Length: 78
Image (cartoon, rainbow, N blue to C red):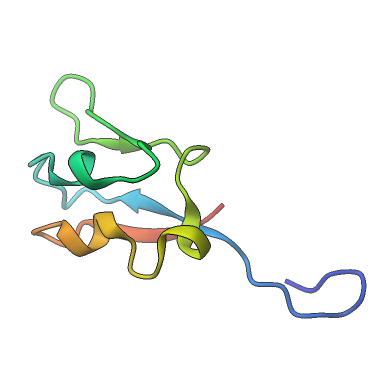
């Protein structure tokens, strides 16, 4: 992304849980932004992208990504 002054601006990314999730709940316990919520019924947990601290604030890889036993997280544009 380029701003009006033609400077390169890094696009913010947020964590997203893929269908590989096994619903272990480890990510819910470590999210510093409290952005991960239990899924409904038999669905895996969900990330509230408005609460996710983004890769700029949480780090890359994010804490949730570091603890996930099945690597079910990916970055998506915010």
